[in-house]
Amino acid sequence: MGLITSQIRLMYLQQQRLDLEYKIQLITQTKMGLSQSVSDLMQVGNDYDPESPTTKLLQQRQAKLKVLEQKLDMQMQEYQNRLKMIDAEYQSCQGMLDKNIQSSFSYGR
Image 1 (cartoon, rainbow, N blue to C red):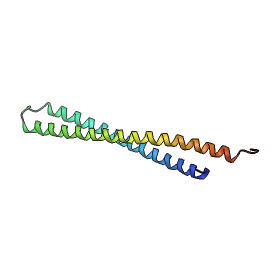
Image 2: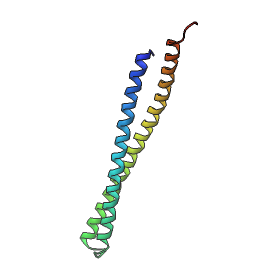
Image 3: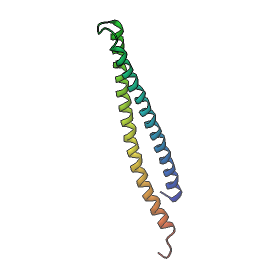
Image 4: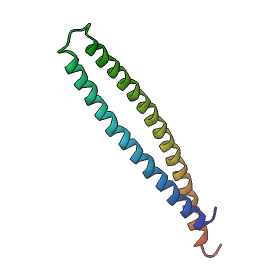
């Protein structure tokens, strides 16, 4: 890769990194909200008879929220893996850029 191409690729990778970090942050915030919702449902569920339809409905909602939380965990893991790949490529591209700079500005060889 040439000097300019390396710089463009680094900027692109940096933008992808920031995008993934933002998505991971959103998932973390969403999971915190879900955890609070599950906790609230558990507290409300304690006030009802275990056999009442309301309690069963609350338990179903808790189960749905836990499934959603698991899906968010899987999505976060995917984003974290992609972030690792981008970091590895960024390091590689940075090394190539350093070599290009070195070769472009070396005199007398």
